[in-house]
Amino acid sequence: MDYFSALNVFHSVAETGSFSRTAQALDLAVSSVTRQIDNLEQALEVKLFSRSTRQISLTNAGVLYLEKTLPILDELAQANAALASELNEPQGKLKISFFLALTPIIAPVLTAFAQRYPKIKLEVAASDEYVDFAADRVDLSVRIGQVDSPNVIAKRLFTHPRLLCASPAYLANCGTPQKPDDLLQHNCLAYRANGQVQYWHFSKPGHKPKSVRTDGTLIANSVALLKAYALANIGIIHLPEWLMVEELAEGRLIPILPDWQVKPTADNGDDALYLVYPPNSRNIAKIELLMKCLLEYGGADAV
Image (cartoon, rainbow, N blue to C red; front, side):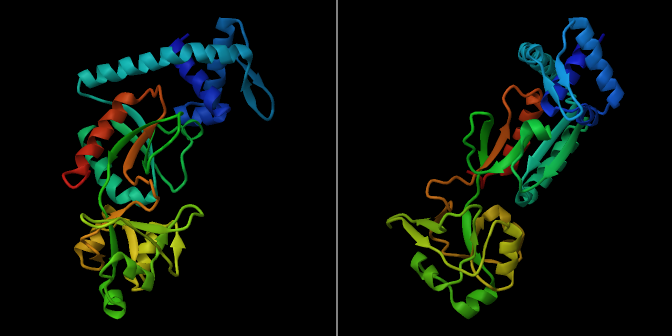
């Protein structure tokens, strides 16, 4: 019996709670998954799973076996990755998740990554939902903002300046704010992913920090919708610069209050990009390669 293959199947079933989902994830037939679990249980002379028509769960012996074999799989995976790296041929699968708004940043990084490492197969899930690493079988996620969780490792990548922007037509019709307090007289379109009151924070050398409570006709957690409103001459938006690169280059959006530094929306917020992955990942070598590509993309303008 191929114990390494059987252990991979065993750990996958333990994570997914399903033979069929394991078969799909590992590109195997369900009968092959069942057979490998049966063979493993026969070799160990113990039941690893309790099976019913509705669910599959680990037995006490299965829980113990999972804990004891996890370091073995991790070390084997790291050894395989290290060997592949030494041979300059990184390979295997890597599943990535990121917020839809990050597509302008992630797309060129992934194309460069694919050209550099053609033997790595990427599976990409772009979604505004937070990923469940175990249930979704995701290797890493790129997120906006600091991640406070003991269950994951979060590596800070970079951030770009935030800008206040509006369309030329809006500024021609409503005037251009000259100081932060002028925003009180404008239609400020707010990004908000929770129910907190929206403040925009400003700092400038030689001036006291300013916090302005904004008000406007749109509150949304969609970057695309906020930009659509701004481009339709409806109001002012406040977003990281990299989310508006094309519109700024074409002059469809104009920066406002360029002498003031616009801080993240939350008082102690951080809108840097973070690469997040579970501890003891079996794909740490490939994750580090992708992180290198992301840092290269950050460039001189990133901080």
